[in-house]
Length: 267
Image (cartoon, rainbow, N blue to C red; front, side, top):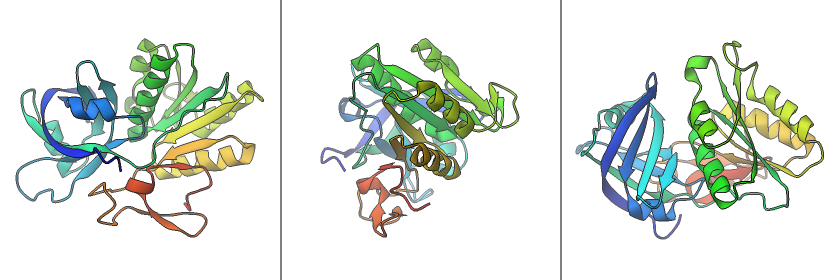
């Protein structure tokens, strides 16, 4: 955990629905914005009582350091996200961050292509990573693959296009983009790139990350995976986020991750 991570009560700037039951909450948190990097997360609490009792982790979606703003993209599925959905401009939200002991490490090889593979809640941190890479070097090579069960659950296609990134969309029912799963599109992308330097960055549902990890190991391509589990404290104290590694070790996702290399995690 970064030693500078702190608890903040910050004002909400906006809270907009982007697709059904999915919202983007933007808040003014200049201290967090200054330190946040792709792969970091925030732990959020809503309400003044004990329901919900535990904080929930959320990836950072966008950062505007000049304006001191950060945002989180979330789906409304439980008590914390229902509470977040009720926040309006001028309300306050309680967060701790930025958290995470091991974050994304961009490929620094000359001419490297950065391949983002995301599904559902795993798309936001990869959007953040893509924008940071493009901000540092507008000529950066980025391939982005987004998957969902059907078109109504796809996220961020338009926003990525505005940033100059054309995303390859996949749906299991074929309602938008390529019919199939993200691994089907990933095989196509890796074949197109051939022997050029490539790193894959992945975040999403565990079965999807498992499949992407296995594919990258199969073809010998470096892959970084942001593992998302419950991390109530985010500081390595509560031991609620233990992840089993392939070498037999058990580590804390919040401080030893949340980003791991393909082959590290015992799925």
